[in-house]
Length: 568
Image (cartoon, rainbow, N blue to C red; front, side, top):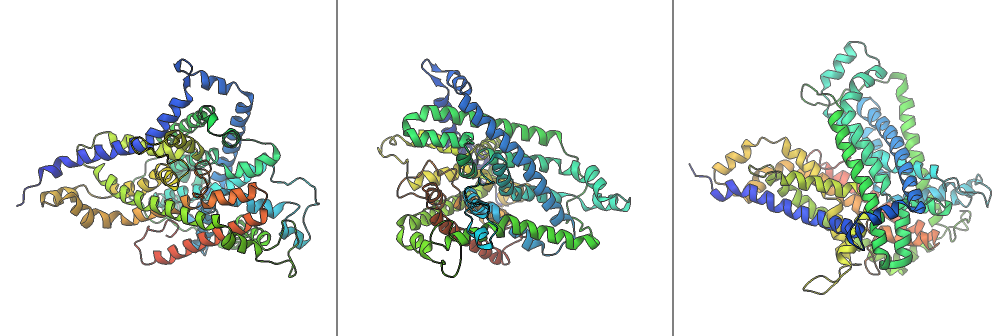
């Protein structure tokens, strides 16, 4: 028998410690720098700057508005997402794959594109409504320029995310519990209250908190809907102050970002507390949930889902395309006014468009590939003997980095990279490299979570047997663990790419000329008053996103189950 190699027996703990230290340095370093800048007074470290910021009525009002819109939108998103998950996960409605795909599509569209599409759908200058002859009178107030408009669009944006989490909880339920309740004659309402709700409580809490934190850090929707209405949330206030006064106000902005960081940390701690307190233990392995027969109500449920897709996806996109096909915003669409001038402008005349697509593809694709590979290695060594508490600490820090608003991450990275780097004397601020680094920090936990769950299902004796046989760490990863966790790693990497490819919150403060991303290019067009160009650029982006999702769906037929997040 081949004796196990000593370096493999002890190397797991050392490898886990080294990778955990790397994660803590990369993820925790920028936020420590942010907190140091935000809590530094004239006499050194002090809470005085934080107290001064919280004493500013403008800051308090912006914080209160952020909390209000985030809380209300998270509740609405949870309700919608839970309803979608129950209909698509526990009933016999048809076309489930198509409905899941179409309901998830808004989540893959940038929030500011969603805002632009809805603005152009319902306003008095709406090309689509004017063409149909039902537009509000010119000069009337846009219905979405209000707090309720912000809440509505934030809920639409995050309801698919809540659906994913609740749907995952439904898949983990043991079928026997539902069957026993049905045999006992439990009606659907009682079944949900007495069985589903307690068992799904951790997933419902996670869905609510994730929707809340995502709304708290959302920049595009509150900016495009709130600024015209004079309704400023905290992320928008941070952006406005930094954009107006430049790096000279980094100290003040760091204080405001620290306020957001503390709120996000409190939300993350509340989520973990809810998950510990809520829930019920299930006996038996998870299995495919039952499909409750809706009977005569099935066509009604299917029609309702179709109306949701029509209202949240088809109508805004139709308005977006209509605006992109006319020469100026507000012109009625007709055979005489149709033009491709806006598409020609953004695709062939504006050099920034090509750079934006290239930069987004490189930064998002590079981050997805790097994080997918890192998750496979880190997931393995963190489960090895002697790993200690560092891997759990590193994973928790990655959770915090995702929970914190993207604008806070941007401020933290500006503080780190605005000065020239030691030894080489080059500042990375404003480059694609900083955006790539931001994606690594922001989306690390998105790649780690599915891989960690896949590793948790593997028998540790597999690794022990391979070590006894003399297999090195690289050989064990290639021959045993990579094939087993590849679907989960691919799923996490795809989610990282699709999310980072269209984001604007993280890169809004990090880009400069030459390092534009898709999100910043669209936002700059709309913010500059070039509505038709913004619509054309948004249409191209949505088409590219849909093409990627369709290509991945078809590719998923040849991949193991679970590799494509939205496929069963």
